[in-house]
Length: 329
Image 1: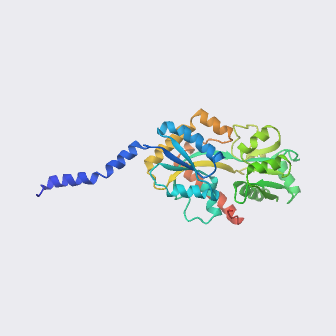
Image 2: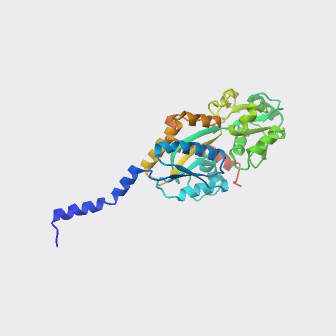
Image 3: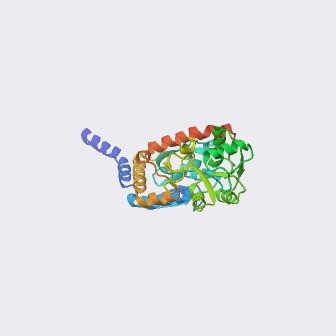
């Protein structure tokens, strides 16, 4: 039976539109089930803690729970690659860090481009490092520390958490900017390095606030500066490096949220709105501040802002790593 031309065209147009219906419905109802947030480091660590604080609060605006999946190994690369291979449907995302989304690109020969493998969602928190020293150190401020290091070339010691860690790379940058020379002593983590600092076995550390603030507050170590543009809410008496005489010497352990590269833009928009809602919550802000984390302004919480920030960090740290011929362990 032949159909009239008008009826045939009408039916054909309707059939062509059918595949689009589930996609539109899916976008409108997202998320319809729990979301997985990959963290590339161990449970209880800084990245895991920040991820869980945000995941807990994002549940309300999204209407679905966020399940943390710790994928540990290879300096964070295993988690990155697990997230990169996940379906780009909005149900898998990754809490990335300076290490996973910047440093590993220069430390290892990756088979993918960190800027193209994911879509940025939002910068979650920024934790500037602190310049800390043993309690018996003669220097009383950052300028005096630099003078002491210059007067004692190759004698000073900095505790670092292994080759390629931000503390290691920041120490190289510090020597270049100040004209100093000192030894870098590797440890298996900040905790054992801090124990040696407390015991006076090493001279200084560039260390995260969560590790160092309890000891600084108790007067067990000296602290000279925050390696960021502004003072910490949790320790407002510590000056910034700009105030201490070493302007622009910034280094931080920051955390961002990404999704696989082909994730639909409307999903990215919903995830970003949930992050911004969480970061506006006073309880979340206080919990992050207690960890020495700073929350950027709302105009810097956008996907584009995170993408630009990641690119700028790559342009800053990769040349230092490559010039020093640092390789990942």
